Length: 459
Image (cartoon, rainbow, N blue to C red; front, side, top):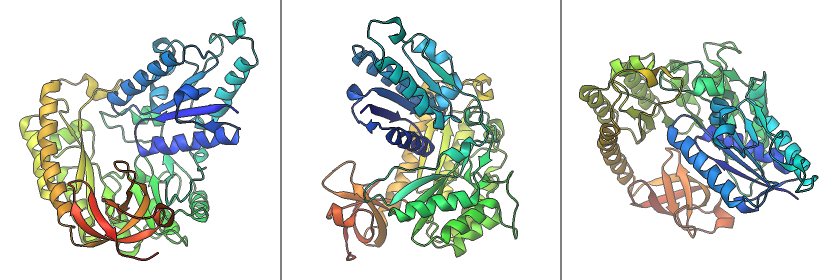
């Protein structure tokens, strides 16, 4: 039985796409291995949002190829956003590469890899047909309906949370972002198909779903009508909320454009919506937002956040912020700091601006040095961390409902889960009895970014 090894870099959408691909290999008779040296097929799924992810992926592939150089039958492939962006160019960068598959072709990966592997295994080692030449595949074409192919899940023991892809693509064209080129235009799945997928997950023990989209609140705006003043996304939230057995609903990531009052109001009457949103700000400077082609002003972003806090008291808001964007002055940067202080985010991902190929920002004047970008990155992180640590410390002594997800990544003898505000909580307990359960946890200590407590509810 052949073995598949798949390494994923990047966002939750990449993780969800990889799960779909692995499911197809398992259905095709493969087993999954965590050791690349044992694999007959090796795939890397990586994003192109930041250069660091691409470089990690290329380095990892190179080291695996070198380590497995005596196992000449192994099939190597890239898939995802980097594959979509670079296409045939990857065969020049990585000469022994076999497969390059773009973001609208995940459902084709198994057939491409399996065909090459079978051809090699059926050939004699010394025959020319066994060589890499003539066997490579590059498929980065668009395919209508491809958004509907990310729908299957792996069966996992005691898994209580799952990602659900509701759409693909993005139409926004931010000047720093390559996603519209790698993911294509917005394409939404039908509500009834998403609901059926969630029902299937519930039947397998899932209690929490995270709805995924590049700009999730714009789901269905080109395919489905508003009904009763409610956007297709709010209609979807209502439909998922009605499913018996679903206890929690999350979504990521929304955009200030299209984040309207009907979505804010949903937090007042849909209690299964978790008290957390990840809401990318990117900059606190209107001038930089214009250069980023983010079509909103800082005050509008602040207004939405304040409305959300009024609609759901205690809601946690996290964000993304880019520092060192071309032309960013000290005054612009200070505006980002001021907004963080004003809104008191529960946490933030702070990124140094990174040039991406074929994006307008890469050609802009006023590119900042890496030293200055790193300096601003650290200054902003200091502010973000101070606020996040204080917010977590304030939870000591409270009781939080936590969905137990499994062993802690930092200490396998303990369990971990998340509150409705997406706070990580670590606690002791019996895995077979607690994993997958919603628990009341008394918070006893804050470790800065993680909370520690004890189970007070009985199962």
